[in-house]
Image (tube, rainbow, N blue to C red; front, side, top):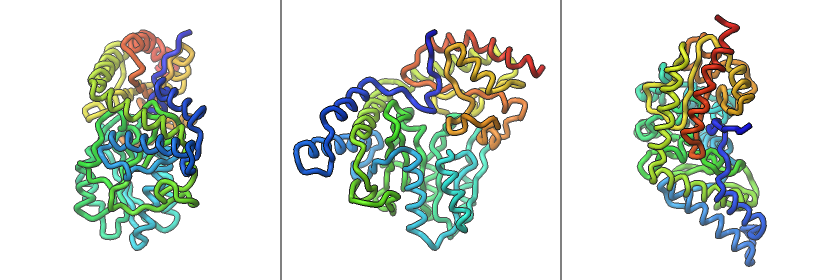
Length: 382
């Protein structure tokens, strides 16, 4: 059976060019980047070349990029850096649809005496900037908001949200893990203090990410020890992972310049139109909002997400019900709950997320079996 992977918001397959540069690191450029000999200097050059590549994708100077173990660590470092720098403030702002790697550390801080305010979203997953402006107080330490939702693909206006925070003198962190590689990021034009990235969401390796820091942003190292990453994160660098991440960023940027976004949007339109035509009782979550062109979040009334995911897997198609961090959770998505998606639809949701590895033939193959899968799932309800 030929298998088709449509769960790219969970993770992407490693690009072949990325695999090759990582293999080179593991086999030949294995030195410690802090060592002063030939092997160490070769490894250091790889790290700094990769920093240049990530910075080029972001639109910043290289020394603003700190390599981390992934998006979760980058999110935590941003949050705790802000809190440690402004101990007099006790108020934190985020939204109800943030990733758990943002909500969990914020919830921990709530147990330590901080007040956490979670902003609502509307029925298509949009955040009202006026709600953000009204929420910020004199004692607000940090605002942490995503750039693109990992489940629905809904994109928020980072420039507008950041401008509100900048006018009010509040630190602003943006989780851009899902946006990177799919839309252009310009931190030189966005008023952000912190921005998080993860390599494995754009055909890079797992276990590597980055935190962008504005020049004026306070930063504290969560990992203490030696002075790697200019004293902002201790520990011997993951050279192979960093080299793969840097190349993945360069390739993603090239793909966007070459018209990759338009090509992806064409597949998304075909998928959504095909589903709407062949499957009754369906809603596209986030429709009407600006969305990532790779993401289709669709709910089928009176269906079971778990059954459909399993049935599709048996037929060779990998999709998800919602975020990978909740994959073992039978409860409906907190994101869809926040969007007030009707309960009769909420339990029958699939997230189909594409990458540049997918093609039109794979989309057509999925459309051919999806009505059968939906019909089977619906039999027990109606």
